[in-house]
Length: 100
Image (cartoon, rainbow, N blue to C red):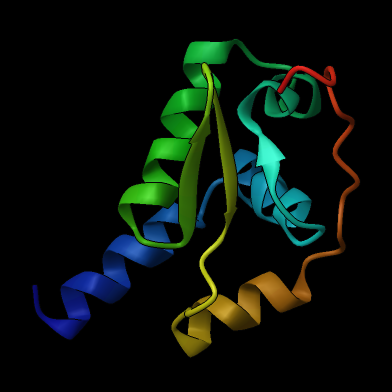
């Protein structure tokens, strides 16, 4: 994939308000996918679609813990993506339970 295609893919991934909210939550650290349902007020399948776009773009990373998936920001970002993340106000993600 060339640089322009990669840039386009990443910029499309961050061009949605829900995905920007997810990134704002991840500024605080790793978050369980179940917490995103409460934050975005959308269904679990819809959350999964939003997360997948950010993950496919390499902006976030996934870690599986039991049946739950946890997400965090990739430590290495393109400067234009890092600038977007830096400009977001952090959002505190509520923890859905101690089991995740």
